[in-house]
Length: 248
Ligand SMILES: Nc1ncnc2c1ncn2[C@@H]1O[C@H](COP(=O)(O)OP(=O)(O)O)[C@@H](O)[C@H]1O
Ligand SMILES: [Mg+2]
Image 1 (cartoon, rainbow, N blue to C red):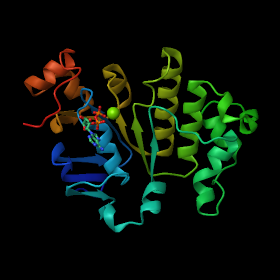
Image 2: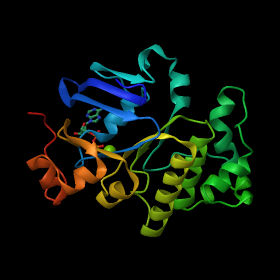
Image 3: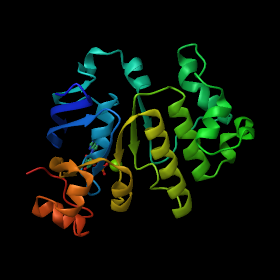
């Protein structure tokens, strides 16, 4: 484990009702870097993310945040430090401002910056603060979901296919906003995507998961230009969009 690794996974296994979903996954995410997690549908990518902020617990193995086993941290502190943006934004009924202030309000606090600053960061006008979340487009919802995550002042951002449900234009905008915020804030990100071009654009490193196992790991250009495994090459060639998820 290096001092500069924000997140470290050591031989993480997840079983659900005896079925192996993830097997012996180890990797590290250097501080301030963006890791793309790639893999076919059903590979275990979302499950992996849910372990990182303890929405689920591993069956075996250890996850470290800044060198500390995350099981030793208060789960609410962990979730403040490790924010999450899902494929489908999960906004609460109410106004945009309510949603952005939600995380800090759980602690009886206000977001570190005015709501308008978060709106600006995600490319929305200040007037959006008073808008009802029901009235937003998909792209706007996802921007607010990002703003809500940022208002917790996280160190790590978990992104589960944040642009997959959006049309092409909105997807591109949200991709750029997320990348910009991560870089600007020095966030460490774990970004699940099945968009290979997106992974190439946004990430520093890649982990490829197939059938619950880590198949490849390395710097993004290395993975895309010279994948080390037959499965990695098949995945890049588009031959592995959906596989049997049983770990053999
Ligand atoms: N709570 C659960 N109970 C049973 N099966 C699950 C559960 N969570 C995930 N799975 C299964 O684990 C596999 C991996 O799922 P998931 O992590 O959602 O994959 P991905 O995000 O890569 O598409 C799938 O076969 C899924 O059906
Ligand atoms: Mg998923």
